[in-house]
Amino acid sequence: MTIIQQTVWGERATIAQRSLDHFFGAEGKQLLNNSYPAGDNTTFNYWWLAHLVDVRIDAFERTGDKVWLDKAEDAYRNVHDRNDGALFNDYFDDMLWYALAILRLYDATSDASYLDASKKIWDHVVDHGWNDQMGASVAWRKQQLYYKNTPANGPFVILSARLAAHDDAARYLDYGVAAYRWLTNTLVGPDGFVEDGINREENGEVDLHWRFTYNQGLYVGAAVALAKAAGDARYLEQATRTALTAIREMSENGLFAQEGVGGDEGLFKGIYYRYVGTLLDELGTASDDARALEAFIRSSTDALWQNAQVDGWLLAGDDWSAPAPDRVDFSTQLSAIMALELRADRERP
Image: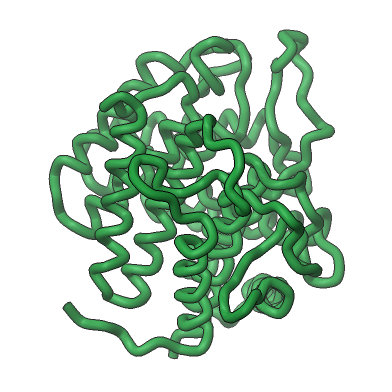
């Protein structure tokens, strides 16, 4: 095992990772308390834990320290065990997040069981969620097959494109391109801003009032994944437009505005940072667009680091311009970790 020398921001990302255990760690099957201070743990947050797998892999890739990979595998098993030994639940977006994390476990370990599990989830989503209502695409959940949204179709495109890189089966890319085309034609405006969903109330209307960083990040990630899988740079142009529009429409003074108070919304900013990172990997550093994105990452993570320190640890609120409130959900801490892992990645020598 090779331990990689860390930069200042790498050390800060490690502090954020360790702070997750410090503030939220729980004994036994719970693994992490849903909030700090610990409160109601009755909810099993399947998709939050899928992102826990992802951030632990981030730390492993950054440091080379197998301790973080072990933590990622522990989180994978925790989801599986708490879900009664099953991969599946009723929410297609939840399952797709888990599949994306599991596929990264395969890339990190070469354990074929992880690749098989990721493919099983993809098959399950296609078999039970793909339909022609409102256009060929993935539904949000099994009980609402008429309701289509970015949270389900974005990760489906990313997973499809990534599986296409692991398998010669053309069906992965075919489905991914079809879902991306539906998403672009249905929920993306002329300026690249991505709306949340359509037909939630079976009236054919788009939910224009739900304006989330989550959706912008998902579309960026989907476009980048297809650009790599299909070798088509036009996808990168679409990803860049959306990434910059999100900053223009949803930020002020170099920070995204607060989106809700914890809960699922606590994770939204982190998803934007994760997938803008994949875009910057493709853009390089020479263009004005890339420099604008880099500047936003620096200003926002500077504020996060300045305001979230607590006695040598890091505890983030949903508003990065201020210290954390009295109660924080671990979803919110995951967003902070994703942003700091991106900053660490961009600061590598």
